[in-house]
Amino acid sequence: MERNFERYCFGKRQKSMLAVDFRRMFTAPLFYIIAGVCLVIPILILVMTTMMDGTVSVNPQTGAETIMEGFDNVWQAIATTSDASGSVDMTLTGMCNINMVYFIIAVLVGVFVSEEFKSGYAKNLFTVRAKKSDYIISKTLVCFVSGVVMILLFFIGTVIGGAISALPFDLGAAGVGGLVMCMLAKMLLVAVFVAIDLVISVAAKQRTWLSILGSLGAGMLLFTMIPMLTPLDAGIMNVILCLAGGALFAAGLGAVGHLVLRKTSLV
Image 1 (tube, one colour):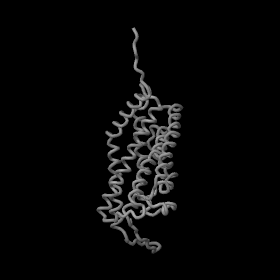
Image 2 (cartoon, one colour):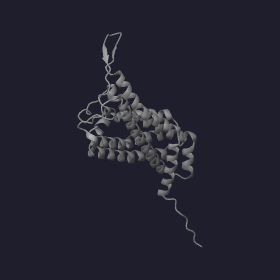
Image 3 (cartoon, one colour):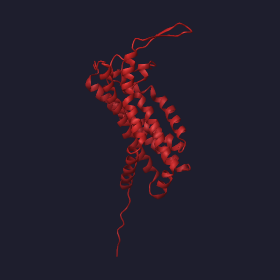
Image 4 (cartoon, one colour):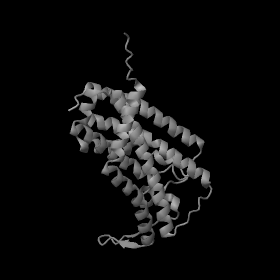
């Protein structure tokens, strides 16, 4: 009598891993705390900078005056146009924009992965059923989706903050098409930062502080490239570049993360 045993193939393993990881991510209080932060930050930034626009502060030691400059347009909290993105803007309005979300994602990935190693969940997972490649692929996809949600929440917060502060919503030469392409590019670029954060997190394992600091440091190296890749007047080429970059980083650093898990202790 022949018995046909159903093979536990890659597709079924990955489907199972994704179901577990999505449930763990979207039932974790940390995700909703960070998501709430992404929504509230742009509202506070736009409202507070508008209130303080034109305020003069004087240095008591030197007597030098500093004039607080707020946002001239709501969409400055999202991106600048390509003609202004070539230089690094270190002003308050230049740094307090949607690009901060990439660093918030580093915190989410670092905590999410390190908690699995601290609790022993990861070791038990590899012992029972999952392959290390399945783990990397699943974490990459789940963290990418979570990062995209954060980008969208920051955008929503920007619209709400702009309405409250009565800033203009004029897109100028960029147009609606440029804004849509800009947001698509920024969402696809999440894959690059998730790949970096994930490989650092699996290397750091239980050391949450090391995961976060390492991810933030690596992210700083790419921070100046974000405005050039995702300007407000972005086009289809920007979207393609971010898509290609995200795919290459996810595949390349995913392989590195898989190697790290194979060659290092899980405790």
